Amino acid sequence: MIAWWWHSTPLTLCKTAYGEAPALSMAHVYPPHRWSATKAPSDALHFGATMAVMKPQATYVWFDGRMRTFEKVSVALLNHSLHYGTAAFEGIRCYETPKGPAVFRLRDHVRRLFHSAAVMGMKVPYTQKEVRQAIVHTIAKNKLRECYIRPIVYYGEGMGLLPQGTEVHVAIAVWPWGQYIEGDDTHVHIVRTRRLHPESGVMTAKVSGHYFNSVLASLEAKRERADEALLLDHRGNVAEGPGENIFFVQGSTIHTPRPDFILPGLTRATVMLLARDMGYMVVEKDISPARLPRYEEAFFVGTAVEVHPIGRIDSTKYESACKGSATLEIQRRYAELVHGDTAAHAVWRTPVSS
Ligand SMILES: Cc1ncc(COP(=O)(O)O)c(C=O)c1O
Image 1 (cartoon, helix red, strand yellow):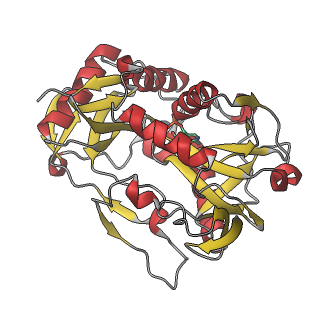
Image 2 (cartoon, rainbow, N blue to C red):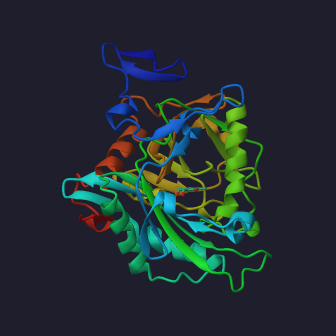
């Protein structure tokens, strides 16, 4: 017999058989937070866990070819990238696997880093191989088993918009970072801030200047007391979250926005592969907000957020975190992949040998 259960909060309505336990909490899948977070004052904005201010806890940073302590690294006040948003960066994760810590899709992330740097006219003074080795070395030096990795390529001191002749620096920071969005009943708000027009930037590049758009969207969502923002593209169709791509489930079909107006992430590509392996028909298409109530599930994906169920988008509720959902199964398979609990795609896991 089927009954309707309210669980977690009254926002996720699940079709669950009588007597069965409600859906697994994400805490069963992900370890608890392991970073020090200072929440903003409650009278300023409704900052939830996603907007916690992070103080990275690691000792060593790789900086321009040398390992330094965090305190020894500084950036000039008249730094070009700070003033004009010209830094190229990546967000990567390292996971514990049966063979020790391994970085997920390192080669692809470093390739994108070099692409983003080239978009900003930067010539990275290292090879991709050297940057990959430096990342692995930084993780080992900090003795981390699981962490978030932030390589950044930026212009140094120099004012004036054209960066000609400005020195290019490379830094790699690592720190433990658990679940990006807490809880399994995420409230998403469609914000007024639109995703950047694709011709006002280069959507495939991860460039710091693009992120004023994501920050505006995140602040707007917080003002509405939502956990995360959803941005529409310049035409009014669903684009992506401030730092995540989005998927929707309708029966055996999964929809995700076309890659043209978003950052088409590596996790998105991984999840499309997993979902197709599971037998879903995955279609990239324009998704209008009016279509959202037709879907049963919705979830975010990205290196930071991993695979995360959405409980509701404004007034539209989803069964994404309910027992037996496609979202939870994709989340489980993604966790299995990054943790090396399957032999599949071993080439995507770069071992960190200490
Ligand atoms: C705007 C935006 N979209 C999507 C993503 C997801 O990309 P990836 O899966 O490569 O981390 C990110 C994260 O880098 C992002 O910043």
